[in-house]
Image (tube, rainbow, N blue to C red; front, side):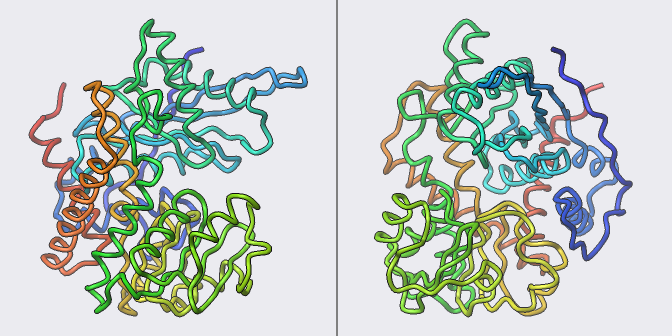
Length: 434
C-alpha cells in the first residue's frame, strides 16, 4: 500500500496567536516558535523553511483481530527536519492521536535534539488505537504493518523511531525485526529503545527521569535552593515520573506528592520512594500505601512546593490554574504540559519554567547513544552512559541559561532560540538544493 502524503497548511509569518491557551499542541508549539524567531530576527524565507515539515504521511493499517473480524487503524509519521541528521522521534499508540499532535511533537523533537546538540532532526509517529484493549498478537500485527507501510521512510540514516506513550521495547523489537526482514539483514540501528539483548543501551529506561533529576539539580540554585532538601511534587507516575521522583529522593530531595491518572497522594513529611515504587509495581495503584492523603491531580499541581515536575500529559498547566501554582521551579517531564497563556502568568509570578525541549531530553540523548553503539557494534558500561548523559544535560542547561540572560527572555524562549539558531545555521551552511 502506498502511503498517502498529507499536504500541510501553515499560516504566514508572525500570524500565530499570542497568549495561546489552546488544546491544540501544534498551535502551542508554533506560538513559541514565532516568539523565538522574532527575537532572533530570523530571515522570513528561512522561517518558512524551518516551520514546514519535510514530509507528513498517513497510513492505513488493516488488521485481522483475534475474533476474526477485520479492523482498520490509522497511523501517522511526520518528518519535520533533517538539516542536522536523520529524523528522530517516538511512536505513540493512543486513541487520541491526531495529525496536529504528531506534527507538533515532530517539531519539538527538532528543537530538542538541537538544544542538546546531538546530530538528529525531528520526527514523530502515532497510531490511533487503545493499546490497553488490544492483545499482544493484535499489537504485533499493528506494529509490523505500520513499519512495513513506512519501510521506505525509516532507516538508520533517514528516520529512527523510538518508544513513546503506549509503546515499549518489545514493540521496538518488532519494528527492528520487520525492517530487517525486508532489508534481508539485521539492522539494529533503525530504532532505539530496544531490549538490551537486541542492541538496546544500558541506562535508556532511566534516561529521561535521570535527566529531569539533573536539570532539577542545576536549576535549584537559580532560586536559592539546592536539590538536596528541596520539596518535590511529581504529576505522573509512569516510567518518567516514577524514576524522576525516585532519583530526586535518592539525591536528598523530599518528594511530598505524586500522582497517576486516578489522582494523587501526599505526605508532607516526605514519601518513602523505594517502598512506594515497589508497592505501585505490584498493585498498579497507590491504594493501600500507608501514611498518605488522597488529592486530585488539580490539587497536586497547586501544592506548596519548591519544584514541580509535570510528567503526565499536555496542557496540564493553563491560564485558568497557572495563577494558583506555588512551585518556585517547574521542570517539564511531559511534552507540552504548559500553555503559552500559563507561561505568561508564571513568568510574571517569577516561576522558573525549565521547558520540555531541555528538561526531558535525557531520553533522546541516550537514544542517540544507543544509535551510536549499534552502528559501532560496541556497547558502553552503564556508568559511561550516565556520565555522558550528565555532561550533555549540564552543558545544555548552561547554554540555555546563557541565552536567557543574553536576550532577557524566559528559559522556554531561550531554549527555542538556541534550537532554532542551530538548525537555521546548519540549514544555511548546507544551502537549498534545487
